[in-house]
Image: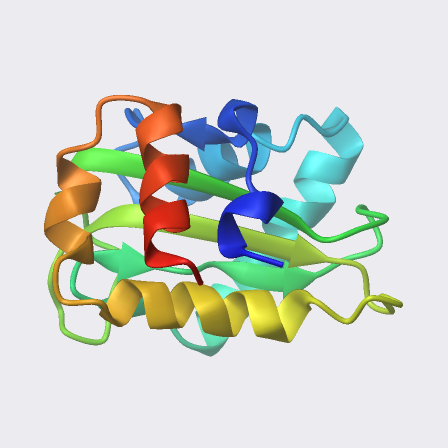
Length: 150
């Protein structure tokens, strides 16, 4: 199973509008197309996770993630904010690329941690931050994931 298999073009946006961390989280959650109540619950869970420590891993990338009963299977989304936003990343630099991961508390397939690890591995590739900035479509994002074969 490759990382690109978990993403769909509908859950990818290359032009996030939010100007601060909370707005970005809400936009990313919106890409999952959940009902309003589920979105609110998920937002609270992600905020709680961010309060433990930022999911901004450096190099302009953040991986907000949590487990929640509002999803029945692993769900992922990607968003890009070309101007960057302060996400309190570990390197104190703006974050431009956001990978959202949400999984149910108990998942039979147990893909949550492997997917989180694959995204972190992808983010460490030397050319990835620059290439993410140059994307023109969700299709190009999926091609990049496929090219890296993670």
